Image (spheres, helix red, strand yellow):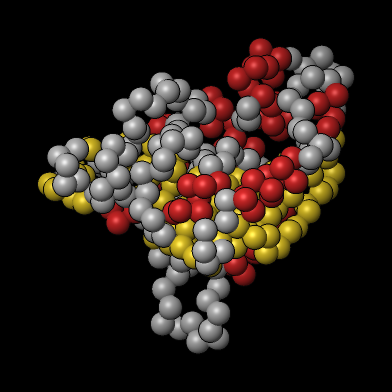
Length: 288
Protein backbone atom coordinates (compact mmCIF):
# COMPACT_ATOMS: atom_id res chain seq x y z
CA UNK A 1 0.00 0.00 0.00
CA UNK A 2 1.17 3.54 -0.80
CA UNK A 3 -0.23 6.34 1.35
CA UNK A 4 0.93 9.97 1.55
CA UNK A 5 -0.36 11.52 4.78
CA UNK A 6 1.33 14.87 4.08
CA UNK A 7 -1.74 15.95 2.09
CA UNK A 8 -4.14 16.00 5.00
CA UNK A 9 -5.52 18.16 7.76
CA UNK A 10 -8.29 17.25 10.19
CA UNK A 11 -11.81 17.90 8.83
CA UNK A 12 -12.96 18.78 12.36
CA UNK A 13 -10.30 21.14 13.74
CA UNK A 14 -8.08 21.71 10.66
CA UNK A 15 -4.88 20.65 12.46
CA UNK A 16 -2.38 18.62 10.41
CA UNK A 17 -2.98 14.88 10.31
CA UNK A 18 -0.18 12.36 10.68
CA UNK A 19 0.10 8.60 11.22
CA UNK A 20 -0.36 7.79 14.92
CA UNK A 21 -0.35 4.02 14.51
CA UNK A 22 -0.53 1.62 11.55
CA UNK A 23 -3.52 2.50 9.34
CA UNK A 24 -4.65 5.37 11.60
CA UNK A 25 -4.31 9.13 11.10
CA UNK A 26 -4.64 11.52 14.01
CA UNK A 27 -4.38 15.19 14.94
CA UNK A 28 -3.25 16.99 18.08
CA UNK A 29 -6.88 17.36 19.20
CA UNK A 30 -7.32 13.60 19.38
CA UNK A 31 -9.45 13.03 16.27
CA UNK A 32 -8.71 9.68 14.62
CA UNK A 33 -9.36 8.34 11.10
CA UNK A 34 -8.87 4.81 9.82
CA UNK A 35 -6.88 4.24 6.63
CA UNK A 36 -7.99 1.43 4.33
CA UNK A 37 -5.49 -1.16 3.20
CA UNK A 38 -5.90 0.10 -0.36
CA UNK A 39 -4.55 3.51 0.67
CA UNK A 40 -7.82 5.42 1.13
CA UNK A 41 -9.25 7.45 3.99
CA UNK A 42 -12.63 9.09 4.64
CA UNK A 43 -12.33 12.66 5.93
CA UNK A 44 -15.83 14.09 6.16
CA UNK A 45 -16.86 16.88 8.55
CA UNK A 46 -19.36 15.93 11.27
CA UNK A 47 -22.38 17.51 9.60
CA UNK A 48 -21.63 16.60 6.00
CA UNK A 49 -24.78 15.63 4.03
CA UNK A 50 -25.22 11.87 3.78
CA UNK A 51 -24.85 11.71 0.02
CA UNK A 52 -22.66 9.04 -1.53
CA UNK A 53 -21.80 10.51 -4.93
CA UNK A 54 -21.62 8.37 -8.06
CA UNK A 55 -22.64 4.75 -7.55
CA UNK A 56 -21.10 1.55 -8.89
CA UNK A 57 -23.40 1.42 -11.92
CA UNK A 58 -22.49 4.95 -13.03
CA UNK A 59 -18.78 4.39 -12.50
CA UNK A 60 -18.78 1.08 -14.34
CA UNK A 61 -20.51 2.78 -17.27
CA UNK A 62 -17.92 5.55 -17.21
CA UNK A 63 -15.02 3.11 -17.14
CA UNK A 64 -16.46 1.19 -20.08
CA UNK A 65 -16.96 4.37 -22.11
CA UNK A 66 -13.51 5.79 -21.33
CA UNK A 67 -11.83 2.48 -22.13
CA UNK A 68 -13.41 2.68 -25.61
CA UNK A 69 -11.24 5.79 -26.31
CA UNK A 70 -14.27 7.91 -27.26
CA UNK A 71 -12.94 10.76 -25.09
CA UNK A 72 -9.27 10.29 -25.99
CA UNK A 73 -8.93 13.80 -27.53
CA UNK A 74 -10.16 15.28 -24.24
CA UNK A 75 -7.62 13.47 -22.08
CA UNK A 76 -4.91 14.35 -24.63
CA UNK A 77 -5.76 18.04 -24.21
CA UNK A 78 -5.88 17.77 -20.42
CA UNK A 79 -2.47 16.08 -20.33
CA UNK A 80 -0.93 18.66 -22.68
CA UNK A 81 -2.15 21.65 -20.66
CA UNK A 82 -1.26 19.96 -17.38
CA UNK A 83 2.27 19.25 -18.58
CA UNK A 84 2.88 22.82 -19.71
CA UNK A 85 1.17 24.24 -16.63
CA UNK A 86 3.22 22.22 -14.16
CA UNK A 87 6.61 22.78 -15.81
CA UNK A 88 9.10 24.73 -13.66
CA UNK A 89 10.23 28.12 -14.92
CA UNK A 90 13.87 27.05 -15.10
CA UNK A 91 15.24 25.02 -18.00
CA UNK A 92 17.24 22.92 -15.53
CA UNK A 93 14.60 20.46 -14.38
CA UNK A 94 16.69 17.33 -13.89
CA UNK A 95 16.67 17.63 -10.09
CA UNK A 96 13.15 19.04 -9.77
CA UNK A 97 10.60 16.49 -8.50
CA UNK A 98 7.37 16.04 -10.40
CA UNK A 99 4.30 17.96 -9.25
CA UNK A 100 2.02 16.98 -6.39
CA UNK A 101 -1.20 16.23 -8.26
CA UNK A 102 -4.74 16.20 -6.87
CA UNK A 103 -7.81 15.22 -8.90
CA UNK A 104 -11.00 16.75 -7.49
CA UNK A 105 -13.88 14.53 -8.57
CA UNK A 106 -11.55 11.76 -9.66
CA UNK A 107 -14.22 9.29 -10.81
CA UNK A 108 -12.50 6.20 -12.19
CA UNK A 109 -9.03 7.78 -12.16
CA UNK A 110 -8.84 7.88 -15.97
CA UNK A 111 -7.66 11.49 -16.30
CA UNK A 112 -5.40 11.43 -13.23
CA UNK A 113 -3.63 8.31 -14.48
CA UNK A 114 -2.77 9.93 -17.81
CA UNK A 115 -1.70 13.24 -16.25
CA UNK A 116 0.37 11.55 -13.54
CA UNK A 117 2.32 9.71 -16.23
CA UNK A 118 2.68 12.79 -18.46
CA UNK A 119 3.95 15.03 -15.64
CA UNK A 120 5.90 12.39 -13.65
CA UNK A 121 3.87 13.39 -10.61
CA UNK A 122 5.70 12.86 -7.32
CA UNK A 123 2.50 12.30 -5.33
CA UNK A 124 -1.07 11.73 -6.53
CA UNK A 125 -4.22 12.33 -4.47
CA UNK A 126 -7.56 11.07 -5.78
CA UNK A 127 -10.50 12.90 -4.19
CA UNK A 128 -14.21 12.20 -4.58
CA UNK A 129 -17.41 12.10 -2.52
CA UNK A 130 -18.08 8.58 -3.74
CA UNK A 131 -16.25 5.84 -1.78
CA UNK A 132 -16.76 3.55 -4.78
CA UNK A 133 -15.01 6.06 -7.05
CA UNK A 134 -12.06 6.51 -4.70
CA UNK A 135 -11.53 2.76 -4.42
CA UNK A 136 -11.82 2.30 -8.18
CA UNK A 137 -9.45 5.19 -8.92
CA UNK A 138 -6.74 4.06 -6.50
CA UNK A 139 -6.74 0.68 -8.21
CA UNK A 140 -6.09 2.33 -11.58
CA UNK A 141 -3.43 4.89 -10.55
CA UNK A 142 -0.32 3.19 -9.21
CA UNK A 143 0.94 4.56 -5.90
CA UNK A 144 -1.94 7.03 -5.46
CA UNK A 145 -3.55 8.04 -2.18
CA UNK A 146 -7.36 8.27 -2.05
CA UNK A 147 -9.67 10.42 0.06
CA UNK A 148 -13.45 10.56 0.41
CA UNK A 149 -14.38 14.19 1.04
CA UNK A 150 -17.17 16.73 0.65
CA UNK A 151 -16.22 19.22 -2.04
CA UNK A 152 -18.70 21.80 -0.71
CA UNK A 153 -17.10 21.94 2.74
CA UNK A 154 -13.66 23.19 3.82
CA UNK A 155 -11.40 20.55 2.33
CA UNK A 156 -9.34 18.27 4.61
CA UNK A 157 -6.19 19.21 2.69
CA UNK A 158 -3.33 21.37 3.86
CA UNK A 159 -2.68 24.88 2.56
CA UNK A 160 -0.45 24.91 -0.52
CA UNK A 161 -0.15 21.13 -0.58
CA UNK A 162 -0.74 20.77 -4.35
CA UNK A 163 1.18 21.96 -7.40
CA UNK A 164 -1.37 20.76 -9.95
CA UNK A 165 -5.10 20.07 -9.72
CA UNK A 166 -7.64 18.53 -12.08
CA UNK A 167 -11.37 19.17 -12.17
CA UNK A 168 -12.93 17.23 -15.04
CA UNK A 169 -16.72 17.27 -15.44
CA UNK A 170 -17.02 17.73 -11.66
CA UNK A 171 -18.32 20.29 -9.15
CA UNK A 172 -15.92 23.04 -8.05
CA UNK A 173 -15.03 24.86 -4.84
CA UNK A 174 -12.95 27.79 -6.15
CA UNK A 175 -11.95 29.30 -2.80
CA UNK A 176 -10.79 25.96 -1.42
CA UNK A 177 -8.92 25.11 -4.62
CA UNK A 178 -7.05 28.41 -4.29
CA UNK A 179 -6.13 27.59 -0.70
CA UNK A 180 -4.91 24.06 -1.47
CA UNK A 181 -2.87 25.02 -4.55
CA UNK A 182 0.48 26.69 -3.96
CA UNK A 183 1.01 30.16 -5.47
CA UNK A 184 1.76 29.61 -9.15
CA UNK A 185 0.09 26.20 -9.11
CA UNK A 186 -2.03 25.07 -12.06
CA UNK A 187 -5.68 24.01 -12.19
CA UNK A 188 -7.04 22.22 -15.27
CA UNK A 189 -10.83 22.37 -15.63
CA UNK A 190 -13.01 20.63 -18.22
CA UNK A 191 -16.55 21.87 -18.79
CA UNK A 192 -19.03 20.77 -21.47
CA UNK A 193 -20.28 23.20 -24.09
CA UNK A 194 -23.94 23.68 -24.97
CA UNK A 195 -23.48 21.47 -28.06
CA UNK A 196 -21.83 18.62 -26.11
CA UNK A 197 -23.84 15.43 -26.79
CA UNK A 198 -26.50 17.64 -28.39
CA UNK A 199 -27.97 14.68 -30.27
CA UNK A 200 -28.74 12.94 -26.98
CA UNK A 201 -30.20 16.11 -25.52
CA UNK A 202 -32.64 16.48 -28.38
CA UNK A 203 -34.27 13.18 -27.51
CA UNK A 204 -34.17 13.90 -23.77
CA UNK A 205 -31.52 11.32 -22.90
CA UNK A 206 -29.12 13.70 -21.13
CA UNK A 207 -29.45 16.97 -19.25
CA UNK A 208 -28.88 20.34 -20.89
CA UNK A 209 -25.79 22.54 -20.45
CA UNK A 210 -26.17 26.31 -19.90
CA UNK A 211 -24.85 28.26 -22.91
CA UNK A 212 -22.58 30.42 -20.71
CA UNK A 213 -21.11 27.66 -18.54
CA UNK A 214 -17.47 28.33 -19.47
CA UNK A 215 -17.82 32.05 -18.70
CA UNK A 216 -19.49 31.40 -15.34
CA UNK A 217 -16.81 28.91 -14.32
CA UNK A 218 -13.98 31.23 -15.38
CA UNK A 219 -15.48 34.19 -13.52
CA UNK A 220 -15.91 32.19 -10.31
CA UNK A 221 -12.32 30.95 -10.40
CA UNK A 222 -10.94 34.38 -11.27
CA UNK A 223 -12.78 35.88 -8.30
CA UNK A 224 -11.20 33.23 -6.05
CA UNK A 225 -7.63 34.05 -7.05
CA UNK A 226 -6.98 32.33 -10.37
CA UNK A 227 -6.08 33.70 -13.78
CA UNK A 228 -6.69 32.01 -17.12
CA UNK A 229 -3.40 30.74 -18.53
CA UNK A 230 -4.61 28.79 -21.58
CA UNK A 231 -7.74 27.51 -23.28
CA UNK A 232 -8.41 24.63 -25.64
CA UNK A 233 -11.71 23.93 -27.35
CA UNK A 234 -12.07 20.24 -28.17
CA UNK A 235 -14.87 19.39 -30.60
CA UNK A 236 -15.42 16.46 -32.93
CA UNK A 237 -18.11 14.18 -34.30
CA UNK A 238 -17.99 10.56 -33.21
CA UNK A 239 -19.86 7.48 -34.35
CA UNK A 240 -21.17 5.56 -31.35
CA UNK A 241 -22.31 2.01 -30.85
CA UNK A 242 -25.48 1.14 -29.00
CA UNK A 243 -23.35 0.28 -25.95
CA UNK A 244 -21.41 3.55 -26.08
CA UNK A 245 -24.62 5.54 -26.38
CA UNK A 246 -26.06 3.78 -23.34
CA UNK A 247 -22.85 4.39 -21.39
CA UNK A 248 -22.87 8.11 -22.23
CA UNK A 249 -26.28 8.37 -20.60
CA UNK A 250 -25.56 6.05 -17.69
CA UNK A 251 -22.17 7.45 -16.64
CA UNK A 252 -23.00 11.08 -15.89
CA UNK A 253 -25.36 13.21 -13.81
CA UNK A 254 -28.16 12.39 -16.23
CA UNK A 255 -28.18 8.87 -14.81
CA UNK A 256 -29.64 10.11 -11.55
CA UNK A 257 -32.67 11.42 -13.42
CA UNK A 258 -32.96 9.32 -16.54
CA UNK A 259 -31.68 5.86 -15.66
CA UNK A 260 -34.84 4.10 -16.80
CA UNK A 261 -34.49 5.62 -20.25
CA UNK A 262 -30.83 4.65 -20.66
CA UNK A 263 -31.61 1.07 -21.65
CA UNK A 264 -34.38 1.94 -24.10
CA UNK A 265 -33.38 1.80 -27.78
CA UNK A 266 -36.16 1.56 -30.33
CA UNK A 267 -33.74 2.01 -33.24
CA UNK A 268 -34.29 5.76 -33.57
CA UNK A 269 -31.51 6.80 -31.17
CA UNK A 270 -28.66 8.83 -32.73
CA UNK A 271 -25.72 6.88 -34.09
CA UNK A 272 -23.40 9.90 -34.09
CA UNK A 273 -22.75 12.44 -31.36
CA UNK A 274 -20.98 15.77 -31.02
CA UNK A 275 -18.28 15.95 -28.36
CA UNK A 276 -17.65 19.58 -27.45
CA UNK A 277 -15.83 20.76 -24.31
CA UNK A 278 -13.67 23.61 -23.07
CA UNK A 279 -10.39 22.65 -21.41
CA UNK A 280 -9.24 25.58 -19.28
CA UNK A 281 -5.85 26.01 -17.60
CA UNK A 282 -5.78 28.39 -14.64
CA UNK A 283 -2.80 29.70 -12.70
CA UNK A 284 -3.13 30.36 -8.97
CA UNK A 285 -2.03 33.97 -8.41
CA UNK A 286 0.71 34.80 -5.91
CA UNK A 287 -1.66 36.61 -3.55
CA UNK A 288 -5.29 36.01 -2.60
